[in-house]
Length: 221
Ligand SMILES: [Fe+2]
Image (cartoon, rainbow, N blue to C red):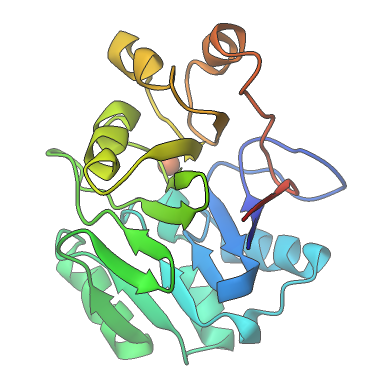
């Protein structure tokens, strides 16, 4: 079972958690944090409010090195340096150097396992390389995207080569016709963060659309 809680987002789902531009979510069972939002103070406060102890985090996957995804990383590493951090060679060399000095840095080059049934897609896209999570559930893969710069349709297509995809959540960025169509066969959609066509997705797929935002948890078997 996987329980995923959004801890940093542009949208609020519940409570008095801080809303800010950026994305981060936590997978409880594997103590895995995906992205770290834009600001360490906000991230740590939100984590505290939902009961996540930074010292429990064992692994952090950074989707790409834009500030709204990596911004909270080093504040977190101040509190817990004993973490495996999954980055990519496409990150700026200065960032990689600091990551290497302050954590156990692992570079992801292709679709590969992070832990048990959680995989990284490896770097996708051309202009901004980005990795997403592909979580193997009983229903198929759940994709968790940071910003989806490579386009959500491309990410879905790539993970589909590994097995059926049943859902997607996180930032879907700019959603074109091809992206919107690619969501048609999914049974779970929880876009958030930088998704620019939220209303369009909601009205195209009212039965599968789920409101996402900071404080929202989803569980999957
Ligand atoms: Fe972003």
